[in-house]
Amino acid sequence: MKCAEVSLVVGDQGQDGHYLSALLRARGSHVIGIGRTRAVSSRLGDLGAADVRDRARVGRLLADLQPGEIYYLAGVFGSSESAAEDRYQEFQRCGEVHIDGWLNFLDAVERQQLGARLFYAASSRVFGHPSSTPQNELTPHAPLCMYGITKSAGMRLCNFYRGRGIHCSSGILYNHESPRRPESFVSRKIVQAAVDIKLGSERTLTVGNLSAAVDWGAAQDYVDAMARILRLEQAGDFVIASDQLHTVRQFVETAFAAVELAWEPHVIEDRTLLKALPSSQALVGDSRRLREATGWRPRFAFGDMVRHMVDAELQSRQPAPA
Image 1 (cartoon, rainbow, N blue to C red):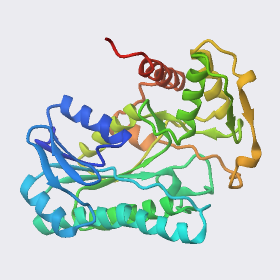
Image 2: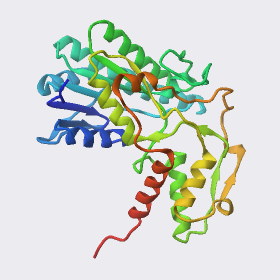
Image 3: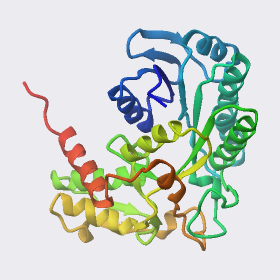
Image 4: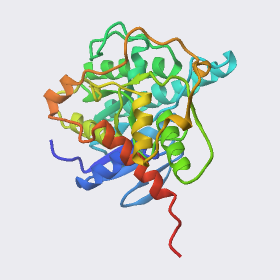
């Protein structure tokens, strides 16, 4: 399959949307990005309102644009640790984006017989506390939070429409980082703290568990996997992961080493910050199916990814030229 003339990236303002849009443009696609409220074309500019929850608007948009590829990356984070009222509202928001919005695109592609290929960005959170390690496409779903529950439901929708002849695939994405990672994530917090201290700030970094192990990859690599998946003639579900575990301590060590600092005087571990019991099985992916089907291999090793984030953070602190 050649690059689609029109690639629609839903959630283009997020980390993955940014890197995916850049990748597709470099490959010659006309990229149209849909953010929270607007659709913007790389050639045509502002296309106006675009609410993924509005079935009629989504249908009109696809009829007008006739995309060959649709990447549904929209996401709303939710936590099982919230108070009951907040949890209810989180479920509503997650459901509106991860299920209702996704259904609107699947429905429009089927009704209009567009022939577009669709990709759904799911999450390793669909596994919850997994029954086995590592996890692959056959590992049972057992989500423990609103985000995981609704992402799992989105994958079920993908499977249903695939059975009806729609070329739709899902990617089960494990943790992936970049300089564009939001500040609420521990990876970005670590990087910012290391740079702050390097630049003279008298502060400390507090983390919940230095021994926590995470399957970390680079966002730039994971969006490449997305594009490769849509080029496959046969749609399916694919784990996108580094297949390796690194601890929070290793992330801290690498980030502080990148700014030539010892981390121990500046980092405090406080287990009282932990809100959930750890799983007996590590959450780590097995991406063999993806690698065998597409030839995908990560370009960023763990240390390279962390150092890239640190370098970008340092660069962002440089004063603007006069």
